[in-house]
Image (tube, rainbow, N blue to C red; front, top):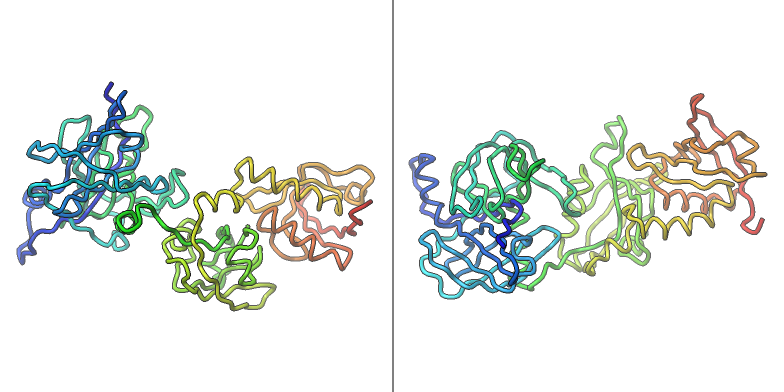
Length: 427
């Protein structure tokens, strides 16, 4: 049974002589066409067909991990129909990238990468792939958007393009007008499995980094500091392009450096702090044992420290950092239920609106007496924003010595401020 792989395109820069004269599109396509190969992966019961990019003359090829997943035999087919058995050097599921190696290839023409950080919306691009197993086919379009998340993984940072890409293009390149790879086409938005003018490509800089990791280590070694972050939604220009720490793993590098849930990241090395996903990607690409200078805003004051980046253990970020998956939510909820007894409520967190939602109010509690009801929303705690369930728990613990908390509520009647006395845990 032939199974066409879900569309994804991969890019690698083609090495061809520079020329003072601008090449026509036809000449550019002709120059790079041989750097794109077809990939056929067989697991004994079915086949996946995709495309791949030649990385080097000695036989390294990059394609999508979903093309090679579970394969017992992988074939790489050049544009002159020569077939090569390919060995799988390594795969990275988080970015959907596989690195292959062919022995003794004849006249493999490597591709050349561009710097994807320089790509702009509106740039002309073209794709070469293997749609429906037809062989190398070309389509053209523009970059429609950058930094897209399609919820395929923790490091989504896709280039969006209207270039026509279909099943079988997986692992093929997206080239710029100069014949340089700017992205690896990874997915399409479709209601029927075919192209609808919305395609997504992994930026070439990510592809380059993952390829080097797979080539050197057989796997991707990522940096980890143990925090979850999100944007701060404020109009104050002074705190734009900053991220709030909303969760933190126990005994993590961040915790050891003195960081706390609720801290606002002002500076982390030279990293961009405008996008939580890009921040996580930048941390993951930081070499373990790197010392990162960090500045955070806490209670109106700037706190400077340094965090030593650790090596991410497989799935460590999923097990240790809250991402609202069922297992982690239930784990945190158990801890939180112990704490909320002190204010007489059980709650949840609305990430989109950054609000604590009252789920239930205990009978014979001060919260009940003061009119707090299920469905009410808590906007602030002792005058400070709340960045998640864990942050709420920490704030309760820190407020315990004072015996009371000030909560700003929003209900169907408007905004209200309520002072609650904390109860002893054994009441």
